[in-house]
Length: 373
Image (cartoon, rainbow, N blue to C red; front, side):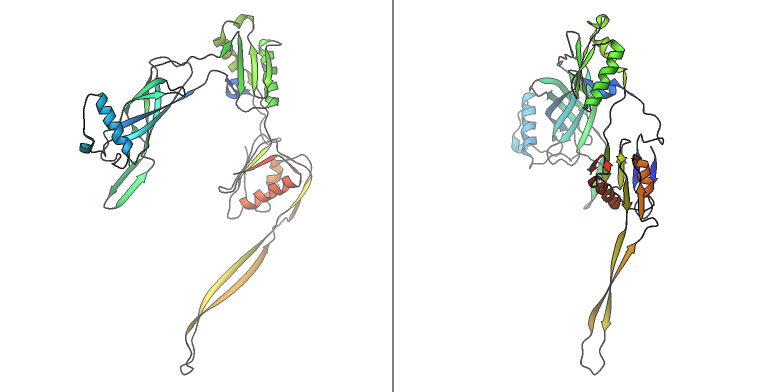
């Protein structure tokens, strides 16, 4: 990567990747970074629970579900409590979420995230009471419980308060125990399907070529631009784990799209090395208009019977900015490095640079997709 800092008050950062002789030769990526094995996937879990032990920062009576949940919890524990005698503030109703990875077994632990759904001010010092975590099929796959870790803090006194970070969301590392396994099927009759994380017909074809070089001709075929079917050779027909492990280290040079991403808020322009320009001439100029307004006092004479008044005096000035090189010609097959070097002579701002790139796209000179954030 190279960095071009354009002058003037705004700073535009142009990040260039893989362009011309300015960047080193592209390195191939391992297949495990480009593809996922179909069937070997995470599953999301969610549950509703109660956090106790809060120091007066929990839900109040305006959050009725917290009261109802506490009554139901105490009933299950054999304690009968009149709702009129209950005082909250030390408990909070929360939603608990987690991801269960593939091949997880009974007794394994998961990290869980807890977030308040009431009006609790903070979950600091709270303990999550045993909470079932269910999947999309409404079956319980894990149970969460434990002390909550909060990243932020808050304090208040006498009407003043200070807060840093979020205090109504926390985590419990290894806070859930897996109670039910999710059956994972990723191999069928010695065949494995790989799904590209960034679908592309060219990348899919390159993966097929690399796999045939590694496993033999006819061992892989592209089903579409996003998936590749791999057939295990004779020695690995009944060894799917060894097959996937062997596929993971296969190196492939993925195809990349020609894109330019512009973020005017931060003044950042990021472009890939496949961005190219046709022959084009670029001119950049601007007009600065400034309006100055001053207030003057009109004081009449002593015997004139006039009144003192405030008079506004406005002055408008226009100044055309003329950069040193107002017209620059760029030849064909120009890389983005050449474009950035040429635009640096204009001293353009982020907004002006975005306008220039969009104008180049409209003129048909910029062969790339522009994404404005």
